[in-house]
Image (cartoon, rainbow, N blue to C red):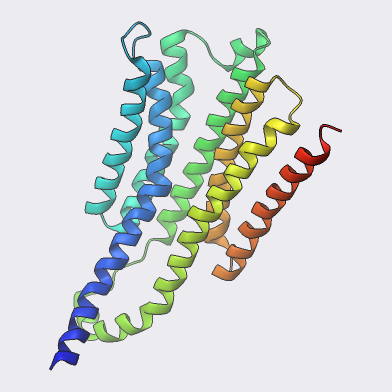
Length: 255
């Protein structure tokens, strides 16, 4: 009797655990993108003279990220992916318009002024918006089509058993995207200021934007790879390559 109860408890807990993992996956990847872009929006919308302006910008970041987590927890996973990636893309693509409305400046003006740092920021944001829109479209095309309820009831036990390898594959890809993507992005954020031919402050800003773009590209590649093993191999070699280049630059760069 105890074995039967344990089996029932295991089958009931399994979907809940996987649901939690999928929710965190959406919030960490898509939700974090929304929070980062919302931070840039708050930088343009919060009045310059307000007290503790930086505090309100950071508060906006974490509040939006929490809202993304709540959204992912109450929406179907496939819908949450599409909706959050689409929102992130919209916020990115609309940011240059917001910048023009609030400051009167836009990418052509920056180019004429020779302000290539801001040109890079604007073009990077637009590029990220297009990339996120592509991810949203891909997530929409990959959303599963639900079978009739009678078919679900008839094949429930078979689905639970057959879905275990698929769930494990998704989990491995999620870990590769989050942990491996973070390692690659961090490595680039450290490496690029060492090699970019520009002032230190500009190099740090450019490397931060490029590492964020690289993180997004790693995520796309991980979920496009033929197998989780190949996804892990790719992010591992990228991270190791960044680490070795940083080490070599630190060792011989000053010589």
